[in-house]
Image (cartoon, rainbow, N blue to C red; front, side, top):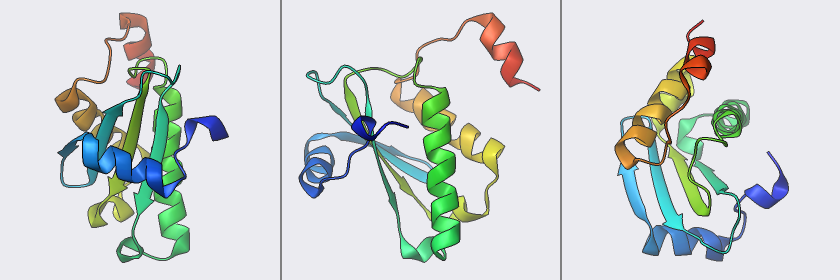
Length: 124
């Protein structure tokens, strides 16, 4: 994921937390805020030390980034997303993380419909 697509500054995080909408499931919390001046979406990640050691936290962040990268065409543009990982995320594999995030995408209606040909390739 490119640097310009990441949220790093504390002020940007605070804006999304204060003005954005949130949705949660057991593994993740996602905050969203419309940011019309951006052409693409931006992603911020928060993975607490409660989740595990640095290796575990980095693995969770890598998985989340990978899923957002794969889904960048079908996610709404011009938005800031912040994903907060909860403790159960530490034991999840790629497929479980993906289905959990897709559950949140569906609940928040940020995921645009994919073509049927794309869905068949994902069901291997």
